[in-house]
Length: 203
Image 1: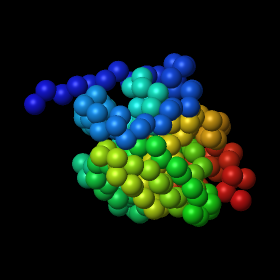
Image 2: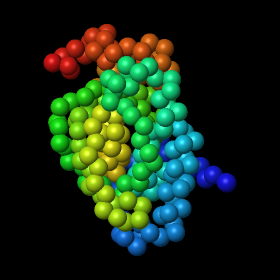
Image 3: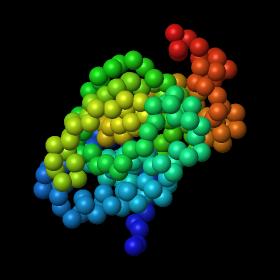
Image 4: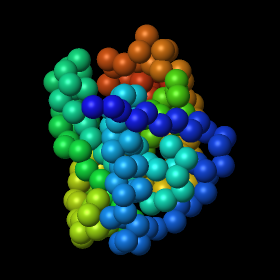
């Protein structure tokens, strides 16, 4: 089956900084949006990544997808998966999401973004959230999530509001993904924060 790989827009492109518009039911069910969803899925898996919002491929609409496949987690030590609260997530489409915080306790981990290619940073996120919206068929969708899923949802909903993780990150932790892999990847967040002079962040 032929895949459609869309161009990933990079920070600085206007579409990433503009609030996306909601979709009507007829639009959601239209052939155009259904094709876009498939193309976004192909693009996400090709990257690969765990979430993608429509503005990242040039469409200013409130549509996002998430998926965290088992194969993405195979090289990650079990203790790191547990620390992050990361589990396998099936493919899911989220339209017109409204996010609310259930547990505001801050969790701090590195995040990357397909629209900030080659970089990563520590980003504080709420521990547990609720997302209300619609699925790819226009049906009501309600997700309560914690751990890594909550982080992914907050990241993608931010995209639909014209925000990037750059707006929320700890600037001192901003680094290339190459240097993250070289120096920090296997270290607990508390150790990273101590080394980078960010201990006050954990207070």
